[in-house]
Image (cartoon, rainbow, N blue to C red; front, side):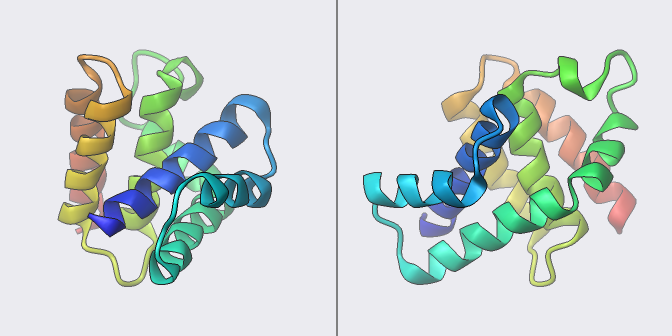
Length: 133
């Protein structure tokens, strides 16, 4: 559960960066003031945030190959940023457990997305996972 919270923090920071060009470090620090997160999970969350942002262009390009009917910018911002975090884990994170990352992304999508978010997120992430195997 604590790793899910760390992933949720990463999603929230990426969402803020995406929507209002927030400074990721300040957004992360703000979340830590509002909600506690174990130190090891803070490190994991920050790894997800910084890695996702560092590889954003590559992640978005990969996502774009699976959403052919519209551009990534037309996707729901919630869905887009959940996929970005999990996509980073699948594509780049060294100690990743991709199936766990996908399961956690689906739970976050159910919590923050609309009725179709979990299915949409699952479809894209499954395709991304298939490409990295």
